[in-house]
Length: 134
Image 1 (spheres, helix red, strand yellow):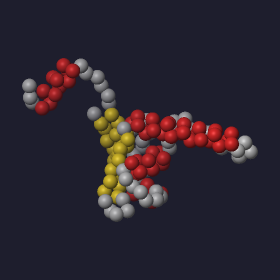
Image 2 (cartoon, rainbow, N blue to C red):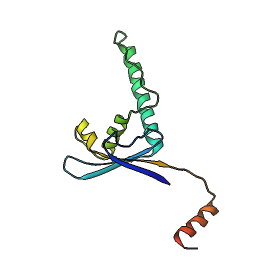
Image 3 (cartoon, helix red, strand yellow):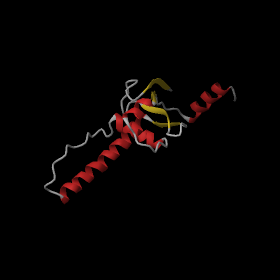
Image 4 (cartoon, one colour):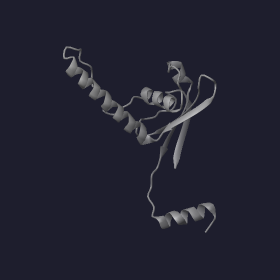
């Protein structure tokens, strides 16, 4: 089951990485409609993985250049909303420069899923009731 809320732009509906799935709809530079989505857990997982890779690269750079200026550590939660949107634009096939204007032009739908468990027998009964078949 999904609950949806749609609004234009990055800051349209309130959404949180790890809580909400996000689906974006946008036009590429040729005017073609494109879409991309992340399930609620995916943006969190991908962002955390990306944050770990950047953190490792920073540690490696610090070893190679010990006199380099110290940089703040990334948030352990992973991506920011902007980074998640930028990643979705790339996932959806956008190859142009990602600008604030491009981010504002997207149509963002947030959704929240409810996960439940069922035995196969319960699934069969549900499916039969839903489709009207036996």
